[in-house]
Every structure is written in structure tokens, then in C-alpha cells.
Image (cartoon, rainbow, N blue to C red):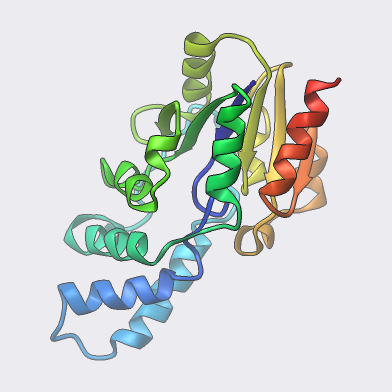
Length: 221
């Protein structure tokens, strides 16, 4: 099987540290600025709004939501966020187990508005070298184009797509795609029954260890 993992909220908790990362980035970039703790809280509220479902054309590419998420300050924020990010329970062990079983394990996630930052964060997390491939969509390619790249490189074997944002699944993939929603509190608040009802072959897990059971069951179908 081809097993593709999102990063934020799927393999790591990079959400609970957002506010602290903003505060550290403000300290680094604007040390003279007053009220940095208040501003960090405000920026956190803004950033979390960008995690909401975004629907529309499948050809849509990701763009920076505001100028503050670009440039020197944004780079400092992503770097501090990478330092504070923590792996979810079992993340490394599950990746290693799947590779031992002979599955193709890839990183399949969105760009972070700044070229190269997602690769940087993957490397900082210690997961980068565990993947057979790293495919990043958003700036140069859409999710659909990224999916087509996977098919061209690895064929039509069962594609198990693991993500904490199930709205990404809607209208994407093919008849050999199995969709796994990794429940993560920060993004689960935006998930509705309407969203889930549009996804066929949906599996819901609340921890990464449960993915091993999903894969095992799919092998016996």
C-alpha cells in the first residue's frame, strides 16, 4: 500500500505551541515592541481561523493569508514553531512499523507559505528521513496534481491518505483511495457531519496506533 501522511495535527502537535511561537518570534524580530504577549494571542486567533475548511475549485493553490505570514517575521515564527512542535504518541514507531511491513510511506502535506519551510520543519521533527518520498502541495502544485504525481510514481495500489483535515478528501483521490481522518482537537472543531457524509471509504482514528489496525483490515479485504 501507499500510505500518505499529513504533518500538522496528524504526526505532530504543532498547534498548542502556536501562541508561544508567535511570542518568541516577536521577541526575536521586534524586541522593542510593547504588548507582545497580547499580540501573540491575537495572531494565534487569526492563524487558527485559517485552519477552517476551504472549499472551491480543485485547482486552487495556497496563498499567504496576510502579509504578516510572509517575510522575516513569518520565518522566525515557523522556526520557533518547529522547535516547540512535539510528535504525537507512536508517530515514529507507526511509521517504522509500516515501512517494515513493506508499505510505501510518504509525507503528503501543504506548503507553509515560505518555500522550504515545510521541509525544514519535517527535518526538525526527525521524521524526514523516515519517508520514502516527500510531496508538498500548495504553492506550485495543487492537491489533485500532487495526488497524480503519487500515482505516476507508485502506481494504482491502495492509497491510504491520513489527515486531520477531512475536508481535503472531498472530491479528491480515486476508487483505490482509503481516507483516514486522524481526529485532532484543534481542527476537529471545524468538522461537521455534512463534511464526513461526503467522504466514501472513510476511517476515523483517535490515535496513530489505530492506523495499524486499519491497514491490517484493508489487507484482508
